Image (tube, rainbow, N blue to C red; front, top):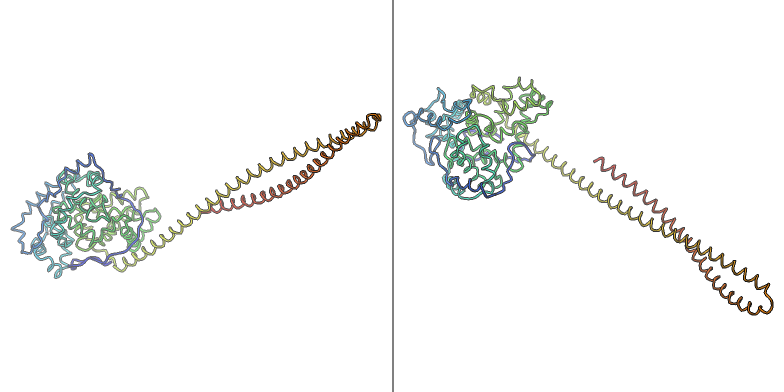
Length: 535
């Protein structure tokens, strides 16, 4: 991942592949399209950019030599900037925007504007030295476009067409406008918000794979301060594509996470004491640096610093963010090592620039002095990809185990249901057995009574007089016949009793088997619960 160099006159750097992990600020909008009061707000925004034609405008065929001392009034341009930024935060820190360095070489910058390709090729070190000192505010918009090679009439025409189209993210964009650059007066009035809305909405349509994220507005803001909308849109497209910022805003933030991993590795290389302190405090780069990389430091840092960051990035490439981050951490090393988690995180996200507050140029100088070997970045990128692939594999294995646990849980519930049903059936059989035993006892009682009655009748027949012998004999025959029938019934009942007893034995066997099966099911359920508890 070699840094872009101003010597490069064509062709984007090689694209990187990476995998993702969720991160913080800013969050993605759901992109829901709504009507009502928001629609009226959107309709009030002009579909055509106001096109603030001031410093930073560059034509497609601009080549003539420029005598800046005679054609550009420095005082006049400074007054224009002051008018545009006079409502920024009361601290006055962005008044530095209006102050050109005393050593600005206007003749050199006129050569850059006139023939950038020649200067970049013939005097790259001189150009980088001047960029390090700061691009003149009056020329910043034009110089940025030259660095990014963004001037494209067709793209500007495409931008005008995009403004006429509707985006599903319009309500989300309008909702976020007032929260974007809350301390910059220009972006708190209608002109600034209209311009910011236009460029962000147009990009959400132009790049549907990215859509809208609030961080895109923070990148577009510094561009709009220095050039008209259509030209800012062109530079934004180059930043997203050629400078590979798109990976910071894709739904899974793949490239952003890779660069956070690279930053951790660079901190380990250059600042081992800070690296160990961060590890002890549980601080990861994505907790503080993700907002730096997603917004190019524009989220909380003053514009006079952000513009210098853009100078560096557009001149040398997005990898300059790593050098800036390392420089900031190195300058504040003593403060960082003395802080605990809460105060440390607050310092990293809000106060880390205080050390350079009065001398932003020193930060750029320190950043330039930091040497980052491209092969080291490539190695860190490969390590991240390997770890990310491993994490994805582990996640898939965990998901497979979760599915298996769910299946086992369903099986256990089914077994419990089956056991409950068997218990119900067992209860029914036990009730039937009790009823059968009661029937057998009743039949035995009846049988005993019939035997006693037969005995009594036989004894009475033996004592009766002879005149009634025939009668008794007849009655006896009747009784004998009845007794035979009863005997047959008794035999049948005894057979039925034997059958019932056999059934009882069979039921007891079934009951014993069901108890064994129940015990086995209970043991298996306990094993399943134990297995589920381990996972």
